[in-house]
Image 1 (cartoon, one colour):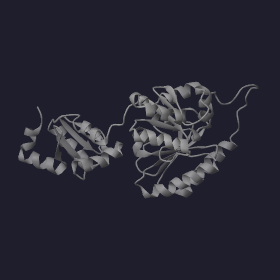
Image 2 (image 1 turned 60 degrees about the vertical axis):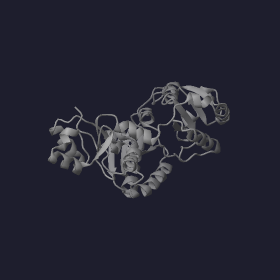
Image 3 (image 1 turned 90 degrees about the vertical axis):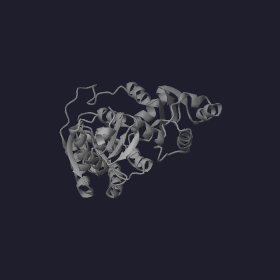
Image 4 (image 1 turned 120 degrees about the vertical axis):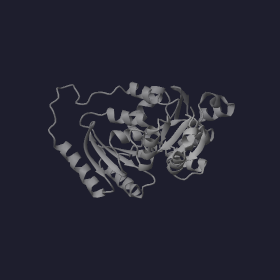
Length: 331
């Protein structure tokens, strides 16, 4: 069975897509936890991965990978992108299991029936990827990298589960790589690190060890001194709110608003020559949901002046009509 790959971040996605050849086949599943049709299609996606072991099936939560979603012009979920090498062969929008299945089958059949180029004796049709370079890149992806079996949400062994629990309890900022999704990394990293088991923990590119070493270092307090901590949601929201004297939280960006209210607000500010900074809440679901609770304001856009909530579009329009808005803007 070819397991579904769930990349930890955009760098891993780039590594996956660039490590193959022009004939390598990929199917990308852009989904969202809040979209009910995605639940069924994720099951279909997993079944297809078992049926087509020569194809890499990569599952991406669209809002967690905005740059990749933008690259493939994802406008709705679920959306499936079929690639041959780095070329998009087809895109399927919506929960159409039959079309997805037939498209994957057609692509694999077409590739398998294509004439193979002649290869001189002693050579290979696929360029060798420098595994050491790839491993160094993965290890250095983040200050704290955990190579584990499974994902933090679904660990596939007890040692990996315990490691994730320890890191989470310490509020450590870390990223993971699922070694079950990549046999080359799974086998190669053991030799590279001279460490025969998993999980493996790296801090600033250096191997710390496995679960037992982690426990010892946590008990002594050494590990806590080495690693960055996760910024709490409240601290993150405060930092964002105070990022500029006039800060607005909108759907989209000034150049590409994603809703009419956001577009109207930013147009109004631009017409009034009001300088502002913006944050696209569609790129961060945690901020999107958390700010509603933090501000006790249930909708977007939200406008903050000098760190204080003013309100949404209707409030701004009222303040503008009364002439009060201009006096509130920092000079």
